[in-house]
Amino acid sequence: MDKLIELAGTLVSGAFIAVLATWLATRSRDRQEQQAEIGALRVQADAMTVAVVELQGAAAANRLLWEGPAERARTFLLTVLVFSGGAARARIAGGTDLQSGLVGFGRAAELLSRERVASKQTVAALREPLTRAAIAAAPLMRSSDPAVATATEQLLNALGNMENTAHLETAMEAFGRAVNAATAPRLSWWARRRATRTVA
Image 1 (tube, rainbow, N blue to C red):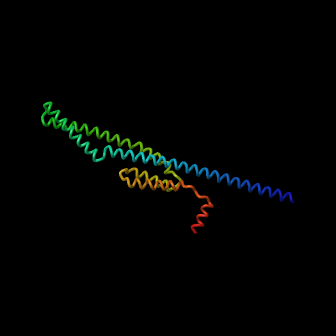
Image 2 (cartoon, rainbow, N blue to C red):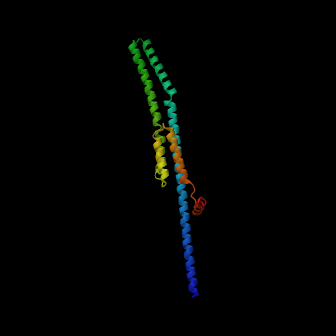
Image 3 (spheres, helix red, strand yellow):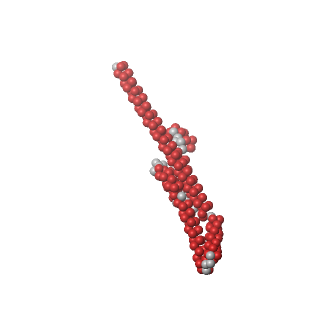
């Protein structure tokens, strides 16, 4: 009888140790997977942030190079000078007033055409940073955290209208808050219980 009790005790303690070891292994694996997921989310969020900042820089350079009042005044002045120079050359070569005017308009049109092509090339250069932002956003939009997915979608929508910088900044801040909340260290059961007791 004593041997049976001893055998039963050994079996129970062995089963308890096996269950405890399985639980600890599962918990450790879950924690490692959670840490890997958080690490991947941080990398993806960093890629998204870099892409957005790069796009903002390219858009600002585009505005500075082609859209500012100083640039428009420069283009206007150059157009007037090219028109005048072309008209003067035609006049010196013995052309009539009409011919001089046509030559001047032709030269001005050439200049404006080159300026337009250069402007479009600069705008086309925004395509690459915009593509990088969309590629960086793809895994974030599939995030298991709905706040991250929503904030990423809102940020992409804000990128569609780069002129509205206030909206873009608001979307960037919301994205940062969502990522920070999703990657914040998770409290253990004991810590959550203690926090609940102190609040109550």
